[in-house]
Amino acid sequence: MTRILIRCDASFSIGSGHVIRCRTLARMLLQQGAEVVFICRRQPGDLIALLEKEFRVLALPEQELALCDGLEGRKLYESWLGCSQAQDAHDCLKALSLAKTGKSDWLVVDHYGLDAKWQSEVKIGLGEDAYTKLLVIDDLANRPHLADLLLDQNFLGAASEQRYQGLVPTDCRQLIGPHYALLGPEYSQLQPLVPLRKQLSRVLIFFGGVDSDNLSGRALEALMDADLAHVAVDVVLGRQTLHRKKVTNLIAQRAKTTLHGPLPSLAGLIARADIAIGAGGATTWERACLKLPTLMITIAANQRPIAKALDQAGHCKLLGDATTVSVEQIRAELLSQITNSVESFHDAGSNLTDGNGASRLALSVLGPQSAIKLRRVEEKDEAVLLRWANDYQVRANSFSRNPISPSAHKQWFSKGLNDPNRLLLIATTEEDIPIGQIRFDRQLLHANSGGHEATIDLSIDRCARGYGLAVEMLRLGLQTMEEHWGPGIDAVAEVLASNAASNACFSRANFAKERALIGIPRDRGVIRWHKASPHGRPQ
Image 1 (cartoon, rainbow, N blue to C red):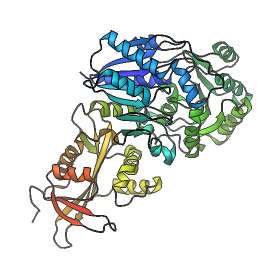
Image 2 (cartoon, rainbow, N blue to C red; image 1 turned 135 degrees about the vertical axis):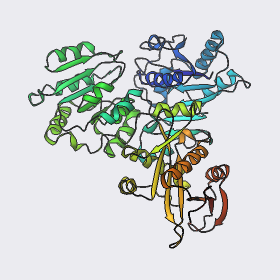
Image 3 (cartoon, rainbow, N blue to C red; image 1 turned 90 degrees about the vertical axis):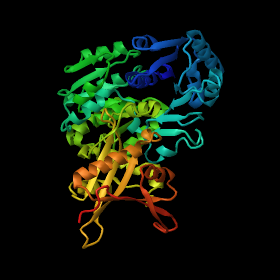
Image 4 (cartoon, helix red, strand yellow; image 1 turned 90 degrees about the horizontal axis):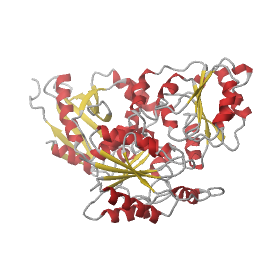
């Protein structure tokens, strides 16, 4: 059995987000047969009791927390740890020794106060003969890591892929962007069922587990406006909220307003709301998955660049920072949304994530747990196909290295859905999680021959690389092609000579290296691979 350790914390200073997303991952890993052990430090506002309902938790001794007032950046995050990194590493190793957990296959670290120093000490302490792989979950890209695998589920536009350059080993696999966001399974299940919002009749207010600035109260005051009296409001307060009494008093003064305590999931409230007023952080991707337009107010410095990038890309409306956004500003924006309708948000983020990030991360950690399968492409696959096509590693090995624009992709995708000479297949896990695509484009060999060949294009999600799945995709794809078009069609592929992984894949799949082409494009060698139909070409 694969044993996985997870080091994360929650507190009034840190909030609850790190623990909640690690719990999401842990549930997925547990479901797939792994053993999961959490390591958390006791602090005011910790969620150790919550985790203990499902998992084994090794609790580190509580430390007197340093004052955070006036601290910024790394000094602030280090204060959240409650001690030095060396002390924390010592405490973790001692807890593991006393608990006799045995050899661990993976160590997952989700803490802004920990970096390569801590990771090195813990890996050395675990012993050379007990090699443990390291998964780092991060949002900041502000310190080095010794990661074998890194997840950053944030969106920063074109800058996203370059954030960890020089901060992780060159062979570290990086899963970057909301495509890998750690959401509960209910989000992917609800996504295709959520209708388009056409009017503003229900608002969801949620500012995380603490809401130290009482932004929930500010939003409620804005909703006291007579022109907003018809709007129903759901207010969610977290376990550690600091202003419950003030918010409860405001809710009592407003009709059509419901208070919700800590919920197992926000999915139901997000699905039925027409607009949200909330912070950045993990809930951003929950709202995006269920296509909910959002008025965002940032509550931490690390949320600002992400919120700005989302606003610029049209995925949300950024009102500003918690220290500056006023009740009047929130009120004016809500009134504007009623006037213009929420359709003024042309894209509430539905193309950012399909909600399957936890499954993809579990695949990267545990490897394939069942056979893959192929299905025909559907309209819902447009966004994930564009993501795969624009993966920077895919573009580096393509004949054209320029990114594909959403408009050009939409035109290509729409045309291909009805093209009788194109067969586009999606590779999925047994649980129907999309992990790759294989495409066959059929063309005549010669004008008068009547024979055909099919050109292959194949790509696989970054989370599924390195497990030999591409060869299986080829085998299943060729079988499906024959069933679709009938026997007698040869398969060919042209691959850049520099693309070692793809060339090795076609070789392992028993394709013949037909010839090498030079200068397509200029000064870049291309290898042509060929596989004749076992049934021969029709006469």
